[in-house]
Image (cartoon, rainbow, N blue to C red; front, side, top):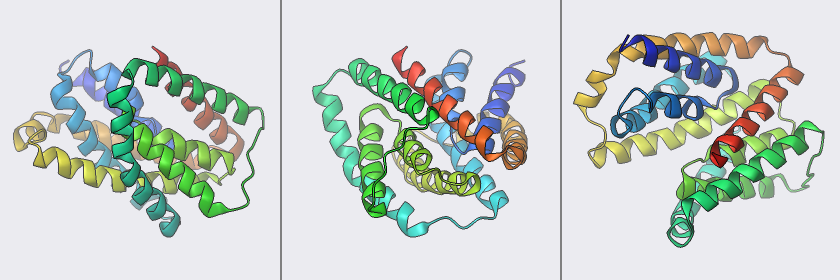
Length: 236
């Protein structure tokens, strides 16, 4: 049972990530926190995410827009320290409430068909990168601005998935390095969670298969519903 319950949580979280390319930590972290030590599971989830995103990247067999993703990634890294400074002067709970409400409102507007049309595509990527960095530094959630940007642009399903996967993979590489360098991730921690790897692989592969069979309209609805869930979780 000590492996089965966390394993099922990992499987379901990886299933969602495999299908939509985001949502793994959103689902896994609060549930695993009920049965495992957060100090060890948080860095382990980052390593799991790295492994999982590599699997998704291989299985999707789709080339992302590397230049656009690199621009967003570099801008996000630059603006992450600004998010950290915002966290220093503002209460984290207030920030999470603000971001939670923002995500819910934006997701509902997108579900109702509202779109913001920006002629300059590079400006769109720049804004998404800035917000991703600020969110990452302040409340440790870098994904929603990228998800919103891709949804707002009505990005085709598989391009949406490969773009998010590549972006998160770049972030994972840096974060895993920082965790190892800071002593938060060690061989002992990795060894203690090896039993969860089969659940991670199984969920990821099942998710990629599921995501490839969801039609465009249903896929967009699932993504926007997950954004609403993410917003509600930030509120509570």
